[in-house]
Amino acid sequence: MSRARRVAREMEDVRSDSQAGITITAINDADISHLKGTFHGPPGTPYQGGSFVVDIQIPNDYPFKPPRMKFDTRIYHPNISSQTGAICLDILKDAWSPVFTLKSSLISLQSLLQSAEPNDPQDAEVAKIYLTDKAAFERTAAEWTARYAGGSTGGDVDEIAQLGLDRDAVEGFASMGFGKDKIIAVFKKLQIKKPQSQEDEQRVVEELLN
Image (cartoon, rainbow, N blue to C red; front, top):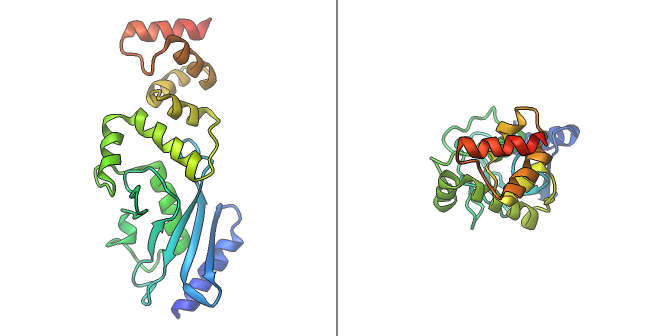
C-alpha cells in the first residue's frame, strides 16, 4: 500500500471514530506529508480541559519509519520540550512498528500526559521539578494548560494543582469517603499543603467531620 493511501485510510479511520476525541487534518489537501493532530488533555491531570495541537510530518518511507511529531501547543511536561515541543517517546523512535498508526501515536501522546517518565526526560528542568516538588510541577502545568491550551481553571484537579496541594494527600482523604471540595476547603482553612504529622492528619479529619 502506498504512503498516500495508508495516510488517507488512517485519516478516515480517525474521522469515523467520534468517541476518541482525536482529529487529524492536512495542512494542504494536495499534500499528505504535513498534518496537524489534536486531542484533549486527560481528565484527572493538570492537562484536563486543554486542547493540544501536534505537528505531524510524514516521512517518505512511512509506515516503515515513524512520523515526526512535536507539540505546537506549549505544554509543561518532563517528556516534552517546553521550548520546542520536541517529544521523548519510544514509539516515535526505535520502538516504532508499521502496525502503529497516527491515531495510536496520538493516543500514546495523550497517555504520556497521564503517565510521565521523568527519569527519561526531554526537558531536564521540568523533570527535576516533577521529581522534587510535584505540587509545584502540577501548578505550573495547570497554569500552562489554561494559558496555552484553552483549559479551564475550574474543577477539583486544577484547583489542587493551582493551590499547590499534595494530590496524594487529597486522594488519601478522599478514599476515606470525604468529598474533594471539602478536603480542599479544609486544607485552605488550615493553611497546609500536606499533613506533616499525625497531629496534622487528626486536625484535618476533625475539620472534615464538622
